[in-house]
Length: 495
Image (cartoon, rainbow, N blue to C red; front, top):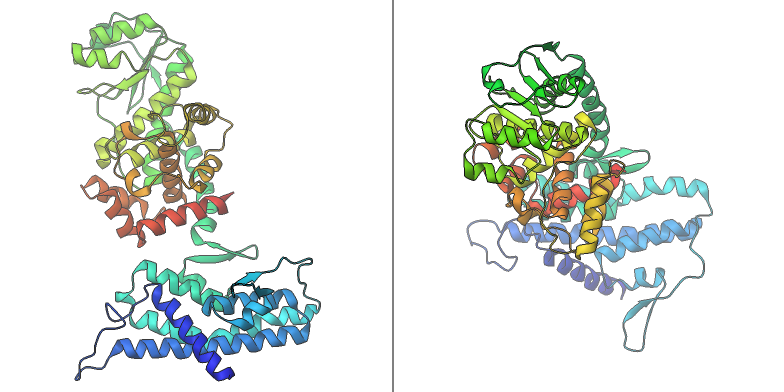
């Protein structure tokens, strides 16, 4: 009777396995085979079934050993593994405390006391025994993965690896295939561990960028700069930028340092050789009258463009090498000009424009914060999911320099109504909501910190006209669903 029960259970397990869409050789397991060519579907089906049968039997024996050694918490884990491979296993259900109700359905009884492992020596031995139990199944399935690697989709690969981890949660080879490493006794994404080292490297890049800025010399305004009719408080120049302003001389000089550091850090962190224009000039305008004079007298600003610029706090001036910011707050002027400079480098050197909303906005904000410690320059439209009060509250939290944006992103992405990655990747900056902005920031952080070697290639592909979806999937080797899941997991492990 037990043999009959085992075969029924195995067939049920096989149905689960096949129902998951794991087809390694044929479009359908029911496909007919050629009388000349061997039927690989049958071979794979038979190998998978035999491996599962052996695994389920071995797991049942392991559960019996756990009972004998009084390691009941470990036994519960074994029963859950059995149930994963055979959802109809009466042995596993009874072991987990399930009973049949009046309708004949299995229901789990609440436990008064959680099971414990009483024999500590046996508990330590358990991992070795569990790995040995799973070894045949592991060899068979890893062999199938290797043999049919070209035919297995990332989603199918993930399902098979998940099955292998149910058989042995600590299998190092399977964790390696899932891109995981052991850290502090837990299996985490390799990107989680790598990002810690990368963040330290990036902080050092910022220090070196500011340390290596060229000396700024105080100079007189040139003929073009005098035509604005503005009383400049100071004019400073370096080999890469001229800085003029109507605030304090210290602010004007600091802006040359900020621009040089932005240029150096941008190239270092993205492994590129971006350049500012030869006539690169930044203007810090502290008074409303300065803004008026600048926009009215700028030689390339026509009336329609002027009307648009009047609505902003600052902007790069199209058709020139000028960046200007006219907020009444020095902190906002610094943040805005650094953000604009990064936008210039992205657009002119890498071909990344506002139409590439997620990366243009996410990368611009991330790098600005690394350089000057603030994230004040961003534009979003009203949320699609949050009520107005909640949306406004979220925006205010994000403007607070004490807010941890990664934690806020983790909260947003944990919600069922989180932004769709597929939709996000197709939006320009004017279509982004607050939640989109947070996802963009988190995705860029993941790429900069966890995939730093691949990120430049992703940017190059997007800048050359490839879609964001194609660039990300192609370079990361994971489909959008996998990328979405990986970023969410990475955010939670990053804390």
